[in-house]
Amino acid sequence: MIRFDGAGKRHPDGTVAVEGLDLDIPTGRTTVLVGPSGCGKTTLLRMVNRMVEPTSGRVLLDGTDVSELDPAKLRRGIGYVIQQAGLFPHRRVIDNIATVPYLLGWDRKKARARAAELLDLVGLAPETARRYPFQLSGGQQQRVGVARALAADPPVLLMDEPFSAVDPVVRAGLQEELLRLQSELHKTVLFVTHDIEEAVRLGDQVVVLRERGRIAQLADPHTLLTAPADADVAAFLGRDRGLRGLGLRPAAAVAVRPIPGGPGDGPAQRSPHGVRFGVRFGGWELTLDDQRRPIGWIDREAPGAALEPAPGFRPDADTLRGALDAAVLSPAGIAVALDADGRAIGTADREAVLAALARPSPVDIAAPGHPSGVGAADTSAVGASETGPSAAATTTVTSRATASGAVETDGAGGGR
Image 1: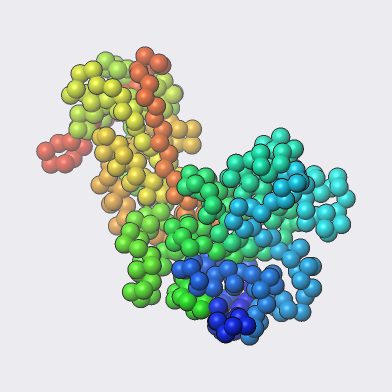
Image 2: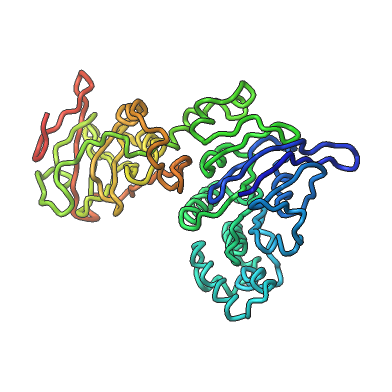
């Protein structure tokens, strides 16, 4: 465990960066420091590996004051990831990753074997090992930076805004990768960011800091979003914190209306677009291929209308935010529930997703993609391609709303 015991930093010119912080970083969990620029986040992070020396108080690592440890030896036992990776430009990727093992005296064969193992762990192809950093994309460089930090299997990982220099799509992928790695490795991670979205997605606990490193609130992501400590914290979280909270709830809470028949079952009923199972909603027809994967929605009241995308979500892997996003993006207002192979297993409209909010278990159920069940990966699978029914044998689902708002079903397996 990392402990800040009255830790403070006053610069020679009298500027106070951090004053008297008391904070425990639990072992094997991810703690995120978040707050406005200049609040002392990076200063606190660097106190742990003695890149910044506190001028008051102590920083303890497993009960030992880090000031009593040799700085070089301390740093070799702590993984450190920064913005833009900080790779050595003159070294190939495999040797960048093996930097700390080399410093620890590992032989070249063992160090490179460990580097190759980590390339696979962070999702990079084996041929990446022979390249130089300039030959990699920004996201690939950041993955190499994470691999290098993990090379000597350190118990502690310090991450200073590691994903802020890449585009949003790459950033989301890197966050997902970190969640996956943490679910397997259970490192003690201290993560710095200025992005509250990233903080609640990655953190087991989130520390919101004010200026001079003072704690405004320390809480799990759900508590932080639903019960901010004061008006300043609420303002920092933003007006859409309720929507962010959807990303902490598992999509398994959504009541999915089954599509009659299972994968591999025979067709129930033919329609002009393939096989119709008879679920009707708003005049839209959902077309599935012969493996029951969504192809798209067809407006049955507009002859000759083109297929429109059929966004989907996985109840076993996505969040309520992902499910709601799929329903909002769907032209029919219906999200398609998918299994792990992308096959349609049911549907859920926006009302069904919102109704799931009224059910208990905001944090008791492990949120998908997160090792502790406190934070969540926020993904929305969109499983549709604008391919005409002639591209494959097709299955279709049609649906419409009744005047009372109920859903009618007919055809095989359907009922009212």
